[in-house]
Image (cartoon, rainbow, N blue to C red; front, side, top):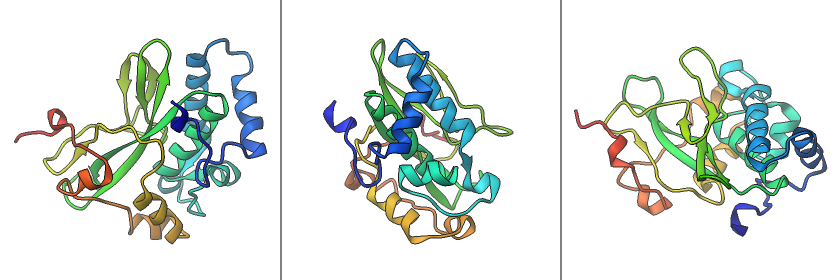
Amino acid sequence: MEEYLRASDVIDWQHPEIIELANQIASGHGTSTAIAKACFEWVRDEICHSFDYRMNPVTWRASDVLRYKTGYCYAKSHLLAALLRANKIPAGFCYQRLSIDDQGAPYSLHGFNAIHLPEIGWYRVDARGNKEGVDARFSPPQEQLAFKIQFLEEADFHAILSEPLQIVVEALQAQTTWDDMLRNLPDITLESAKNYGLVADIEHVPTK
């Protein structure tokens, strides 16, 4: 599990403000599962999704997501991982490929997290932020993510990565405003997914 606890340039959980918040959130909770839920709900509810709120700047480093209180789904997953790792809870990164407008093409990657819980092992959560039609929750062992697969070219990937995909980080770093990011969301084809260490869960891809 060591690789799921590491600090990095993106997941800079050793930043003083992240450590302070991680300790604050954990205070009063007696189990790692309770702490994980509290961290998830804090990021889900307190960090504004950049598109939902039309907020700048585009963030990618966990400490900057906390500083500016905004981020796309990927950036919010970076902060959640940092808060969890600061509390010695293993956290990884998961991705789906989704239709951007729920109409089919174009598509983009969607980022969220997996948390290793003592009672059940890996458990996936999505802290992108709830809104009408989106109701992501922490209710293990039942998984309640923000989005479901609807189209043939969408996919739910099995992999739980220890670091965010570089294509995602680079996309965030290349943009400065929420609307520029919206026009340049990262994507990979299903055929190329294996090159990124991702394998589609074919059971979740509709057949018609």
